[in-house]
Image 1: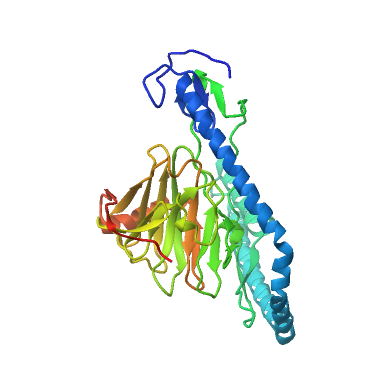
Image 2: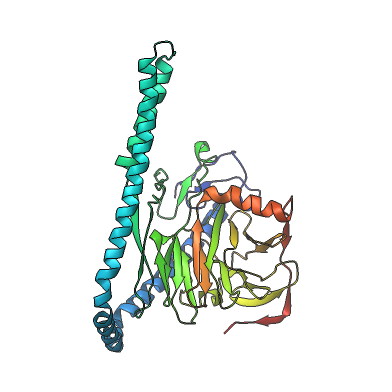
Length: 406
């Protein structure tokens, strides 16, 4: 690594002059702390080997998995025999629903075009009515919008709901929802460890926050809607889901809606280190931090009873707000009907960067949806109904009641 002495600022960990800028975490380091940061990156690199070994172990057991699932294949064959006579009727019903939706769609388009035509003809037949280039531009734009709304843009998508073999899926017709385009950060030249000599133009760079999606998941749960939703299977087993994004710097605001929560108010919201071992009980991992039902928080994978305002009354249709603040090394959590937001501090030595979103559940058919960032105003309105100036409380807890959920 090449040195470059500068007086731009002090090291982010001490008062010494800075020598290096880390492109990964966007922090400034003196030579001593740059070396320490580099050693930490080596440690995290070692965790990649652990992830590799886990994946290799799964692949080596692929043949045994196939053998133990022979009965499952027989179940699928039986399901096919029993339900194939109903498939055509379900498809016919779906086609009729789609045809009706298209007819309504075209009827609405024709009505809007007829209204547009009447407006234009009125002006053409009455020379006393005034219009100019601005009106023509407006009407041209209106006509183009009609074309986009009813011709260019796909109008409908087909979603199939249901995962029980003995129940026919339900096919619904609904408007198409196009996910926002993913923005990419510009590339820059860095060394193998993300450390580059200080350049003043880089010190003010900020990363634009993006909406997370559900990615890697354990057994007993499946991902839906291009990573914006998940659903637990009909059994009562622990299941965990990780987000796709990695968090090492900045503040990130995530919003959720509990679509289904029937058996108990237990659902985990929090984080774990990317390099941690991941399974269906990932909330018990030593790097896991977060909140769940029964008035409890999880610190380093251990369930602890809180005593400072966090309530466990998670319910179906609740809104959830989770703030991942890497710079302050803390999480902030709120759900519907909770009077205050609650804060949880993270020990970076026990939960090293990068962090990832972690959701865990256990109830049959539990379902959770990630909401777009545009929902922030709606969440704020819900909070204002409870408290005009939502404040943040530190989570206090009773160590003597510590117990790990089994």
